[in-house]
Each structure stands twice: as C-alpha cells, then as structure tokens.
Image (cartoon, rainbow, N blue to C red; front, side, top):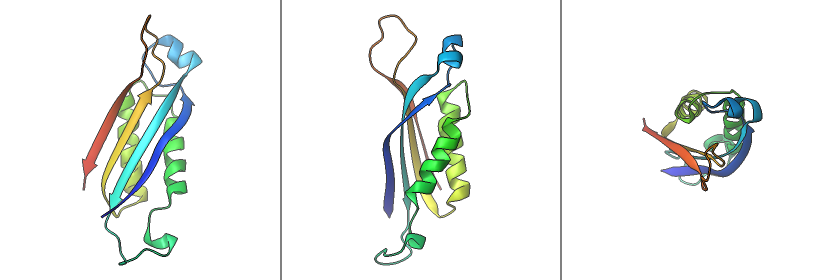
Length: 117
C-alpha cells in the first residue's frame, strides 16, 4: 500500500451556518490522505500513481462550493476522489475552520472523514 498526502492546504471559503460566514468567509485548512495498492514493484511513471495535482484541483473545486456543514464538504471531496481515482482503497479528509465566530474562541474546529473501499 502506498499513500499520497496533501497537507495544510489553505483556502478562503464560505462554509458555515452563521450569516457572517456566508458573507465574509473563513480560512480553512484541508488535509487529505489516499491509499492505494501499487501496480508495479517500483513506481517510476506518473500513470502508476495518483497525480497529486489532480487531487489538489478536485479539493479546490469542492472547497469553492459554499456549504453549511464541513462534514458535507469532506464527504464530497472523498466521493469525488473515488470517482476520479477508482483504484483507491482508503481516503481520509480533514477540514479545519481556522477562525470561529465565537467570542473568546482560540484554536480551530474541524471534521475528519475516513472511508475504506
């Protein structure tokens, strides 16, 4: 099994249930890890692996769709990746909202979605 990671991807997006999030947006961090069985004993060609630039574009497209819940966004990323990369065996998507519209809150809030195939 080999894993492709995209970590600490930053996006300004408009996800959330609060009115100000829909207008002002927020900063989000996305981490994605995809596992698949290698076709060759040693991978030497892009056709034998998962092109992480294609994965990035897929994540970016999903992050550009304003959505109420981060759970929905994470699952959409996962399902889109499954369609784009049918050989994957598992996927983990984590999305963190880096600023919450709550007085005194410091830190991040997020979700992680994991699925095996």
